[in-house]
Image (tube, rainbow, N blue to C red):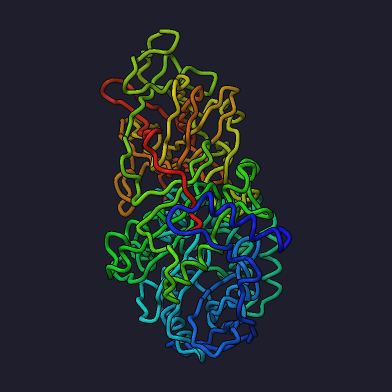
Length: 633
């Protein structure tokens, strides 16, 4: 923390350099800008439509004027208000800017009544709480919401219920669908996120809420060693959540039994309800966050289908080089390479949230009404850019063909990525004549996750940037690498692999990872994706594969923004596992999570004339990639 006297000078200097759409202002964290003293009320009750009482702490500014309400609905304890690790400013800080701030424990958590069940009650409870908060003494009737992760979900679920007093939401690091993109990803179970999260957080705190402290202690103890439990099979008999033949976290077992995008998940989703959203949205996310795809889907979805013109025009998203919790500030828990980017990548979540609320809740003309707008950080270059849409207008989709001379197995092989403009030959001139590459996939010995876009801390769930060169020596990873680039290449947007593959199994997975290779051999992951074979055509209706038959798969590598420098190489890794980020596919074709049986499979990746497997990159011409800017206003 900077000394108070130096803070306004430093921030004013940063803003004068970086602001792109409005005049520079003093940083709102400047203590001198706080104009209201604050008093706190604890455990204030609000009765929901079914009679269940939820409790909140209310922070009241000392003012005679009616002021707006800022609401957070959390399952992580209203006392913490998501202030740590290095995330949001305190409720007192927000209230001191003359807002009533309400931090509520959701149903079945903290001090609130009722039974907790993921997502199930948050749409109706969100509506009821917004309308209750709007009628608090001293409120002017306008309510904004903020918070991260599940606390972002409580905002979106409330917004899809269209409470009339909800004026805007500011969700961070949250998704569009609690099945695909949250619990699963293109059919694969997100093991490193779901099990540790439920063990160490929501199941334990729900047990505390019920007064079962012995169970809460047991769950928290199990949560301290998630690696042990992530090896347990079958998932449908996961021991920590079953006590004396009773399920203590039924939502976990329901998630396991609903591995398709069925009615169970559609009852909760956001993406089918964009036409009900009537409010402006300011969202924050990161290139290595577990919910990046959903955040971008929300941005585009409301912009295109929102209920009101006000909502459609005022969608804005900030995407930094962050993971789920590491937002770049000095005491953030963030992977070392992301930390090394430095202050230019720090999240502006608090100052921009306050400016957003000042405009939409108080009517201040402060320059934040610039949507639709995407502010994104380009790694490598380490600069901010802005665009009016996603993908960025002017994106050129370029194809790179997978090829090899004899064998692409491991980094010691001769796999190549060949630009559509280049001859099909290695730099040495040897013809890339192989028609396929093969490897054996053993689910009992999966490829380890080194970084990625999981949740929730980088030292527990695979997140962030890491050197991949160590695992690239495994024979069950196919490595395709381009020649050194002769000029910089800006890759910004969603990345796709069109993969022709066959397997000896009736079901399996295929994984893909985009990597930036420096001249010294350092290989940094940019993002990754996975596709479960049986879900190749539909997440609703799985179809087994015929062993030996060649199918075309589309693997969605999650979006990135990276400047590949001249002399660097583009690399694509193809395999069939990414553990523990994803549960290894058993290759048996049995319903997910019901069996402990594991089978080996031989995978073949085809790249002949009839089966041109390709990597499709979103390229922005470097000379036309926008003006460096800042998301701070």
